[in-house]
Amino acid sequence: MNSNACRSAPAAQLSLLERVARAGPYYAASDKLRSWIETQHYAGYEPYDLLNSPYLRGRFLRLRFVAPWIIQLGRRLGGLRLRRWLKVTPSKNPKALALCLSAYCDLAQRGFGGRSESLALKAELLRLNSPGEQCCSWGYDWPFVSFRGAVLPKFSPNCIATCFVANALLDMGDTFRDDEAVAMACSAGEFITTRLIRSVESPQSLCFSYTPTQATVIYNNSAIAGALLARLGAIDRRTEYFDLARRSMQFLADGQNCDGSWYYGAGRWQRWIDSFHTGYNLCALLEYQRNTADASFERQIQAGYDFYKTSFFRHDGAPKYYHDRVYPIDIHCCSQAILTFCAFRDRDPEAAALACRSANWALQNMQGEDGTFFYQRKHLWTDRTPYMRWGQSWMFRALTRLEQVLAESERS
Image (tube, rainbow, N blue to C red; front, side, top):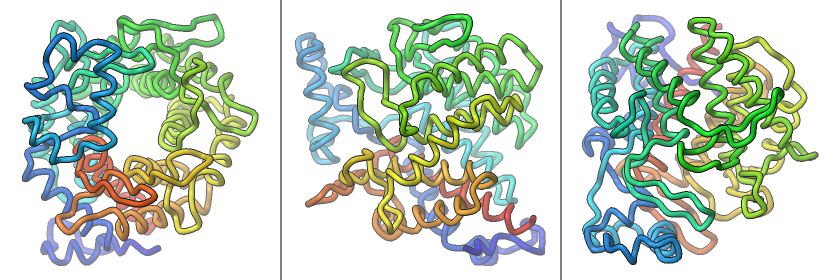
């Protein structure tokens, strides 16, 4: 479990080969991936981007009973060939940029550079701010229509993208003392509190919506918003942010099943249980607890973590997508497994080993020769599409976080 990460000489005095040797196999893998991402200028394809095709812009093809079938075709069977045939062009996704920004911050804290790349990503995030919004907010670089009701025009703001960008900007503020990045994150907090619908609200609990236009009730989305508000509240002691954060965590706690799991959402059509959204929920609860010192949800954290550990993994570390079946094995589940176990390292003595186990499995079974990671392993075949947001940026973020955690454990 030894990362061999930078033990003696300052990183600035080490040659590149010495740095790689001391950082171990995770640095070698993440560095190869980083090189590929930078070669692509952070632009890429996405599982849900088929409506970016110039051939699929007709009004009929955007109808609710047509568009979701097109999107699901692109997600399940499309791959690179279909996207190139339909002339879907690679584009930059704000959430992908945010994940890369957080990864660069981890690298910088270990002396591996990253400042110039972080400044460039911050500028790009400023450029990609959702149009027409007074507060900083971000959306996805493709239009989306869901069977379950969500309709997201291209670059329209949503809670998840905004929260991930804001957290990355706070990482940048912590790492590089960048006041502009912190100000952008604080503006995103204003978006959360003033523009999102409170789909459920009482004096005890509340649920933030996914978008400013639809009153969705999705557990991980609301919890991630609450965790961001707790982090922002800790910066300038905004008591109203702490109150909103606590109520959002109470809503998440109230929605937990008896076995420690969570459904994706409260609707009857949202009753599936998957690993990466469960990881989101657990990390949100931990982030809230870390920034508020409120241990009210200790029981829910432990029950959720126990369910996560026992229900979503094969013995070799391969993460299952759903709790009740193995396939597909998805790269997003791999990355979130690494991040979730890293987050629990101070609570669970097995967590660091479990993070390494999942990382090792992903490196051996999901990484291609060019450093990119496959989308999914199905029961009979593998989808090797290197989606930028869904896979590459997530694994870049996960591997650099694991390297940082292992380096910290060596120093302690």
